[in-house]
Image 1: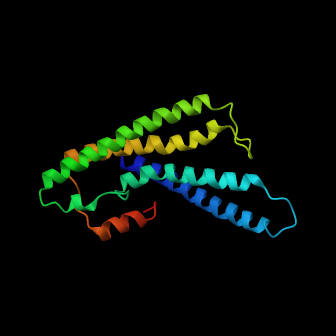
Image 2: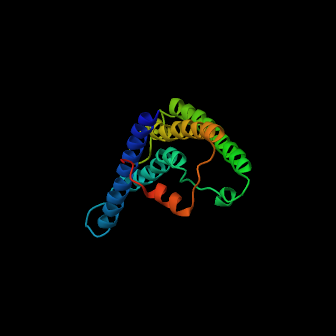
Image 3: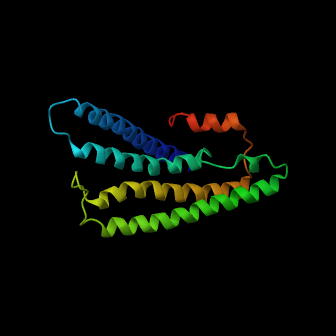
Length: 173
């Protein structure tokens, strides 16, 4: 299971890095086009926006696994460890349930939106949703695993420094 998680994390972080780089290059191209005596390329802005959406959803599962997503750290400071465990399990179950809903909705969009194309790129919108689907599936599975892990093994101790280190750690260890 750990090897599969590492591979999935590597793939998702690699896709995330590609999207960040793509956003940087495309926005740089947009800025440069303003000073050139040629007509601008509308697709650069559209692809940059799409890349931001893809980046957001593709790395969401990694954040759940690393416990680096937005959370209320006050709960971790409660002295009653059983209460902390219950709250963390419930929150992971809720994230997983929301992920199931988003996955189902996205799967429906992948199947039904192929006829619609984006304005500038003329890319089928089913492709747009297919890349987002990767992140929804990953988030759902990783949150379910986290819920089971918290229920069985308890909540690992953490402090602000640990959370920051986990959030900034490189995918390949």
